Image 1 (cartoon, one colour):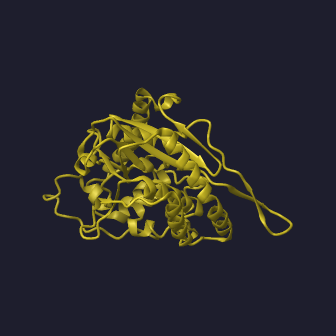
Image 2 (image 1 turned 180 degrees about the vertical axis):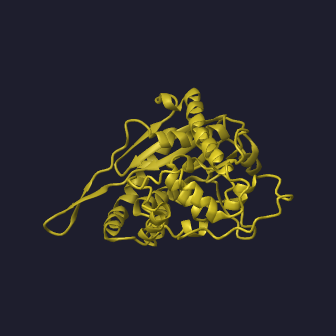
Image 3 (image 1 turned 120 degrees about the horizontal axis):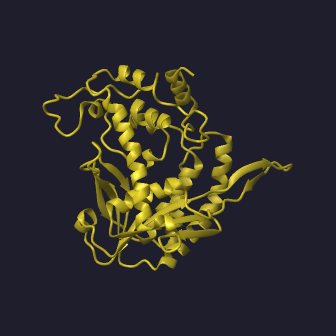
Length: 337
């Protein structure tokens, strides 16, 4: 069975911030992404496996292409980009030398070429996205220009919010934040405005059938008519962190984009974002109750064996188990199915 490294339980008298069970599993925060996946995949990813193992999960070319497009607009527009400081191992804002859109495009294409496809189908998609990433970047640039963003622009800012109903804080990263004349310290600590926060979502053409000449046909990606519930949950978390920010959600494909905000989408009004935030918190409350039942246990394997009895693995989900056959096999053995 693939499991996370056993944690050495710290002296409980010295652990005053978190209950024992969270230290036992080395779980110290929630994220909006965790709140959008079902219990089975969540528990396997974050309860059974550690970060080192998660980094070995299969990726896919769609995710890598999305990162490339996001990076391009950040290289092009951001005054500062939050990155890991090698000296401290912590996230910190670094000054960004802004690139032209063309240079940013070339830089992310080179980065995308380093992505290793996991199978033949994924390689076919990668080849396609090498052609469509530049088109998608152009669409995202047009979308951002439509918003008329000005002032300092910050990318990958760390956002954290600790709800009193939870033991753990919820943590995330913003794609782009913008406003006028704020400093690095204000980026970290100030919730004053007027500011805006942009969440960017990309969609990619899907491989379809092989033609007689050996080439492949693709189903063209389209922007949605309404936002995804999962994306609204993420936006709700951002709003909770930065209540003075106006949250905007951009969907972009190779030949189109759409911008949703509170002016054209009822779901993104302040009132409804509060409702989505409450839905997110209910997921975390339930999971904390589930974990806290074993707060007096010190054996990770024993707790895992008990928890899988009460958690549906949801192996039929179309993509949440796309993590690599070795890991899916280990998960099925864990759930004995």
